[in-house]
Image 1 (tube, rainbow, N blue to C red):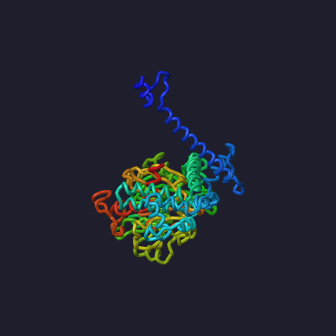
Image 2: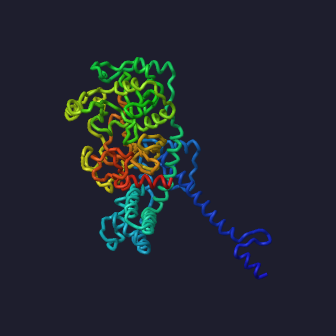
Image 3: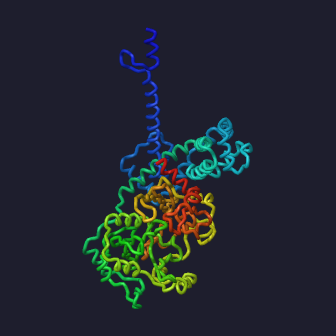
Length: 545
């Protein structure tokens, strides 16, 4: 009998079928249910406050919100009108533990915890030694980082930096210390921010589900666009010395008429099927701008894996054409919606009609320079590149993220490429994602994120090796007749590709990593990209997604 009772105490099944072990399970389930209920109430408070900024919803204990209002709140969160400043205003209206308990009590709790928390505090308030920290540093920290949204990327970069130079146990200690520091400093602000991040992911997931990358054009509409289109390119130069402009008959014979429609904001761009020319994927674009339709060549960059506009080409000394990069290659990257659409079209419709005709179409829409050094270089250096496109785009970047100037030849140390503040990418604001294939990288996974202030869109690329790079940074400016934004962002070394020419690697190239034995490219992952804090943050975000 005693043995039986002892067995029941240890969790064995009793005669009536109950289990003592279920008690702990029920308690745990009760905690989870309470946490879920708390989170849902926080979500309702946040959504009500977002929809009615002048209300006091954050102070109400039981907020009710209709399904229509919930949908409206999610739409607002994903819109360009709702930025980090808006959520910061909500978060900073809440009291921190320092407000509720006093800075001395918060600091006393930190002293009783792990030294790693004090080391992080010392770093962010400017002490060289964590022993110099005091209760007054709580206020200094909150003055510098009043919102957990603003502190998040700094904390992540700090922990990643520790992890790079420490063993896994130490790295894990600092990771936990980072969470403890956030809780100690922000309290409810951190709780509600974590809840908001979940809402934000839901909001962007809902928006992505509405997107259609492209539409098939009706035959009549295709014919109308084709009839209106004009060629802005120079005459093609043939081997017999004759010159002839690209004609609509040539485009029609090559079956490169408008077939698909892509919408970018309020701009409508028609494109042909995807074909191959000059060793690259390409498409002919028909861009409506200023009351006319202009024919353009779009192609997929081999080094970046993203789609670009080709405004001109120039012949090298050996007679082969070199694809022009304008005044900056970053200004020629197509908007992310066009990137996804063209990648989808490439998978949807691929066939070759006539290589010669396709090559004529590829070069025929662009301006021609007979010598790279003879006439292109002087035009480039004197800011006199030809073509209507150049009158529709700013020659200087409207946003410079490069830190050392958009045109510097000095490559920045990878550890310096952190990027914080309003223009940093928000890894909860996933605007779009898709897969594509590259002749250099194989299968690629593409993800686009809005910046914290919604003014920029970052396109991150990842190959099957897990190598990550930024394919482009896009502004919100209108689309011009080149199919690109009329204002552009200079991201400099942030957009270092995973394979770079050895002459442009800044001494960071990995010569053991090449796409092929005879390639002039060298790998940039091991010594450069893997050490970029912004890239590390992206990698962390997809690991925890």
